Image 1 (cartoon, rainbow, N blue to C red):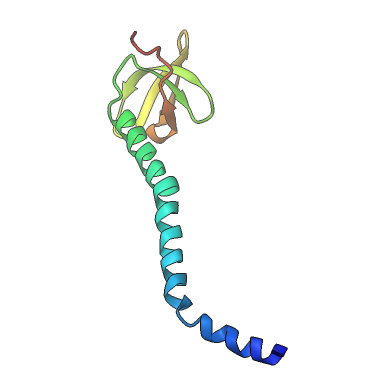
Image 2 (image 1 turned 30 degrees about the vertical axis):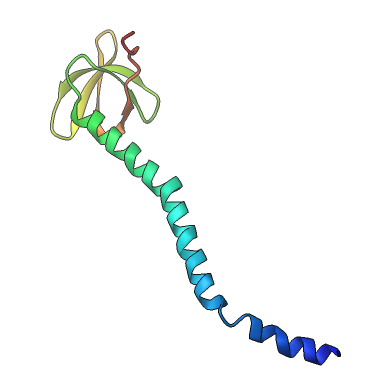
Length: 104
């Protein structure tokens, strides 16, 4: 056997690899969706539910790290009290989470 015979036989063995490549690409996409996109969407839905469920007296944290208590709610903005008699108005989208202790 010479090297030319081996090189000519190799491409014939790989003819069916076209479908397997597409199956592997689809499998990679499914795994990526399952581990990256799906959890991100779930987190966004939870955050939106938190923002929609805000009420007066809730303790919140802004994106900038400002802790406060909700004093007033409007459609797109929230007035939060950050210290005694110090209030700031922020967008609802700037609120990240509440830091209240979960009930035991």
